[in-house]
Image 1: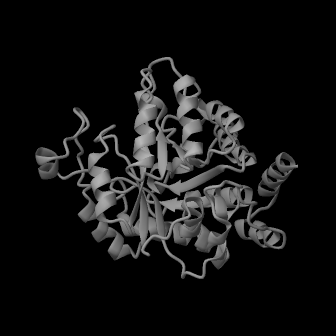
Image 2 (image 1 turned 120 degrees about the horizontal axis):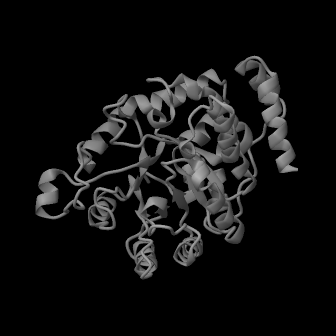
Image 3 (image 1 turned 135 degrees about the horizontal axis):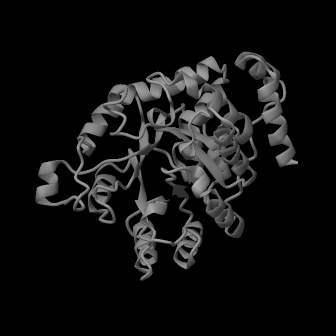
Length: 338
C-alpha cells in the first residue's frame, strides 16, 4: 500500500501545474507519516508542552589552529581552511536563534574524537554528538563505537562509505556488526553519500531490511539535487522510496550543496514538497552544515532559506515545527537547552 501511495504522489506532482494547487489539494488528506517504533523514542516526547525550539541536525566543529597545536591535532592532510571552533559556532547560533545542534565528527580530526568530546562536555545543554565509525577490517571500530556511545555519550554514528577499505561495501561483516550494534545502543546511523545516493542505496536498503530497529538518517537529502533529467529523477525517486522503511529519516541540510542556485535556493522547493509528502514532516529535519555554510550564505541565512521555502509551500505551523526541531527531539528523545 505504501508503494502505491508513493507512486500516486509522483503522479499527482506531475499532473498539477502549480505548487500551491498541489498543496491545497493535499492539505485535505495529508497527515504526518506514522512514527517509527523504536525503544529509543519515548512516546511522551510527542506530548511535550515545551515551546518550539530550533535544532540544527547537522554541523561540525573542529579545533582552532592554536588548539590543534596545543592539544587537539588535525589529521594529517585534513587541515581545515575555515574557522570551525565551538566558540564561533555558538556566536552564530546565538545570532540566528538556534537552540541546539547535533555535532557530526569532522574528517579534519578523523577518528580522534577528543575535541568534539570536549565540546560536548563543556556545553551539554547545547550539543549532542554523532561519532565517525572506523570501518577498518581489524574490527577495532566496533569497540570504539561502543565506547564513544556508552562512555562518552555520543548519540548517533556516521557511516562514511569512502572510508571503507577499497573494494569493500558498508554491508560487509564489519559494517553490519557496527550497524546492528548502533541499533542495540539506540544510536541512529547517518549516511554520507557524497558521490551519489545511487551508489549506496542498495547497501542502505540491505541494512534497513536486516536490522529494522536501527534508525537511519540520510545526510543532505542523500546529496540529491533537483532532477533535471530522467536519470536524476530516478535517483530522487529512490530517495523517496526509502520512506517505505519507517526507520529512515531525511536531513534537509546543507542546502547550498544540493541546490543548483545561489541563496535562497528556491529550486529546492519541489524537493522539499516531495519529501514532506512522502515521508511526512516528522521524518524530515533541517540542518546547516556549519561551518561550510558560513562563506556560502551565512549561518543565519541557512535557517532563513529553509523557513522561506516552507512558507512558500504553505506548510502548517506544526509541519514547520517538526522540520525545524521537533523531529530531532523525537529521534533523540532529548531536550536541548534544559
